[in-house]
Image 1 (spheres, rainbow, N blue to C red):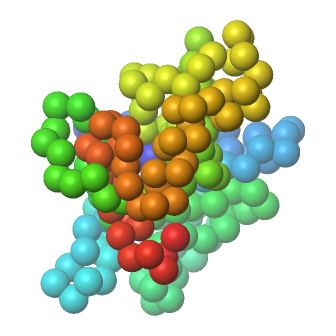
Image 2: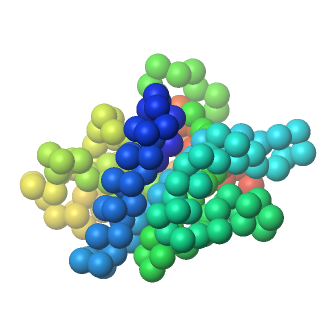
Image 3: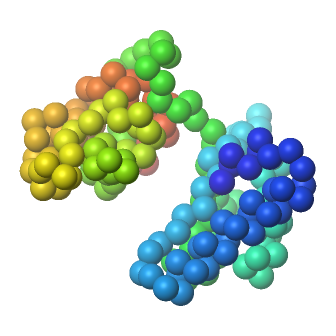
Length: 189
């Protein structure tokens, strides 16, 4: 959802939020789908507290759509996320550097839930360890050619999971992704 920041006018931002919340509500009514509205663009202040300022307008728009108390509720309770409705969640977190092969590698350590709790499938059937790999750099296989189980049991997939179990990023793209740093504390994963 934080891509709305690039939307120039308040009217456009309101329409953007209304379309997303309408989809979420319809998905809840017609499917068993879970919807996570993600705002991963928070900043931390000097005391390490999260600043909701950048999201304040969006949160108020979302609050209107779901009859929810709003940003004051999050701030008063120190929350990053809440359930807005059955199977519709709002999640916020600090901004991170998206994976980019042109970035410098800092180190090879890190942890990620890629393939452990999540995977992504591109429209062409390419299976990836996570949705942040939108270019298919870590293509593990294709569901049109192999079963999902076969792909998850491939050597490359197993090495990736084993690497993260040892807090090692074995794939170059993973080493250039800031998301893995969220789990630097071994007790937070």
